[in-house]
Every structure is written in C-alpha cells, then in structure tokens.
Length: 197
Image (cartoon, rainbow, N blue to C red; front, side, top):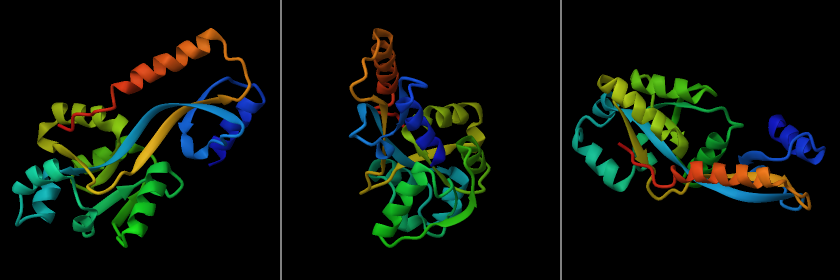
C-alpha cells in the first residue's frame, strides 16, 4: 500500500511523469487516467490435482471447466497458494468469496506469482493468475507438459483489475509521454482476449 502512495506522491512532486497501476488506488480529482487493460482473474490447477479432487469427474471435468468456467464453491476443499491480503488479486478474491459466502483453503501466502505457478505445477496447491500471466503459464506447459497447468475462468465472476496510466491533471505531457502511453496500450491489447490453452 505504501508503494502506491509513494508513486502517486512522486507524480505530484514531479519526480516522474507517469505511473502504471490499478485504477482503484488513483484519486481521480488529482490524476488523469488512461485505461490500459481490464485483467480477469483465472484459476490455475494441475491435471494431477484435478484428478485427485474431482476423481469421479476427471477427465470430463476439464472440458466442463473449459466451457463453463469454474464455480469456486466446488473448490473449497482444494488447497490454494494465495497472494498476501494487501495485494489486488487477494483483495478482489476475498471480496468475491465473502459476497458468495465461500471459503478457500489457503495453505500458503506468497507474493511471487511465479512461485505460485511452480507450486501448482508440482501439485502442491492451486493458484490464481491475472490475464497478463497466462503466456507465462502456457510457456511453462510447453517446457514441462508432464506438469500441465489448466487455466480456467471463474464462472459468474468478473473479478477484474483495471490497469491504467496515471499522470497529474493539468500537466502538459510531452509528446514522448503520449507515445509511451500508446506503446503500452498497444502492448496490453495483446492480452485482451487470451487463449487459455
């Protein structure tokens, strides 16, 4: 939380021109924002964990989850590695779980998402990822197909993380600043309709 405040304070002090962050934390009266990407949260789980926790439905459940998404109520007995409670994914997930009276079995809290995926690939726990991490997981699947990770959308849930470029209102942004924003928007557009596997 302190880092976000430091970034925004830095813009107001003219330490830097632009910051990329979650829209939730931007005071719209002081900052102009330009949306970059509405990331969605996805569930990540290995084939072995699906076979273990959905033994009577495996492998058919893979097709169902791919087509319909996952209902987190079905995953309450599955162990999860989650981000710390101050991270966007955890804040969003906890709000969703509370609203739906659900509880997931958190066996570990870590901030490094790459470690989340490695633990999921080793059948230790399921995890979650934002849209921009899908290519990383797909690359892991190519390199280690024996530790295949499934990526599923969460049905009936729009758990999103809106990334924006923010800069101080009434500030004249130089041409290169606008070029940078456009470059970032173009890069983010590749993640708008991800292929899950």
